[in-house]
Image 1 (cartoon, one colour):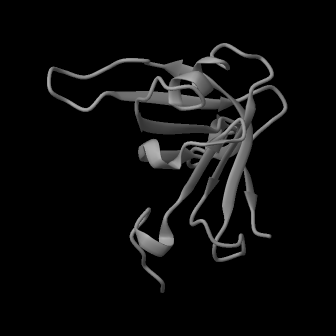
Image 2 (image 1 turned 180 degrees about the vertical axis):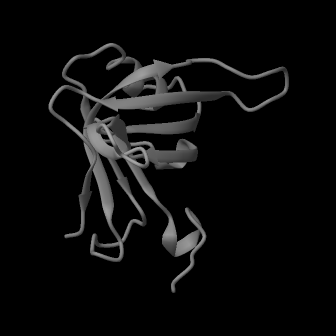
Length: 143
């Protein structure tokens, strides 16, 4: 079993949105690949039965904020509330995509964007919740 440190050295991740590489501003990220839990329990059942419902994917990214042109705010703010979104690409490392080095992508819009957050003396941070636009979901790419 291979264990690696995420985002360190040769395992440095890649995060881009709308074609803009924002990797050097990412502090943390979480990819959520969820399905709704649909109760399909019928009469006379001895336990609850579950079936996967609709997909409900999302990606949470915590960025070090940057208001410079072509950086975090300029890239994200353009798509807040957009119904068309842009491509979000996350690669487990910057190396070639393979079955053991997958990438994750979806056409997404920032549904939650906090341009400024934090307290006095803290690094300026922003948390963004990306959700797929209609017809999209997270795709796992292995080549």
